[in-house]
Length: 155
Image (cartoon, rainbow, N blue to C red; front, side):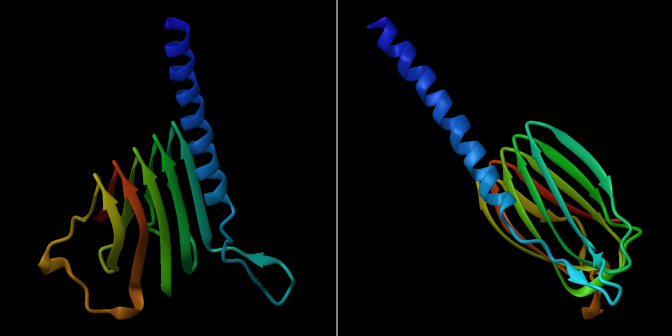
């Protein structure tokens, strides 16, 4: 009886690990926004951050940010976009599972949060007085937060 319980316990752990790796594999299959320039080189103003049981801090300085992807499973990240300019219609896709993300953006950007939160939280720490009326600098953040947190800070 004891061997059966031990087997079931380890079998469930292995299934959870395989399921987590499957989720990460699916998230890696997303297509990035790459656009060819006149000289044939890729101009990639698009970032992708993936953390599994770890963390990272990244700073991006793009001429025109098109968007990004943030995937964190039991990990976290801090993304600094303060020196970056934004392209109209820029979108960041977020998947956080038992992890967190902090996105630091310039004060003159509009933020639109459109996340599904399951035992998690997504918040924009700006006040009504800090809201910006310039629609050309709008960053849309889509995604899913499961038992984690997403925070947007204007700096």
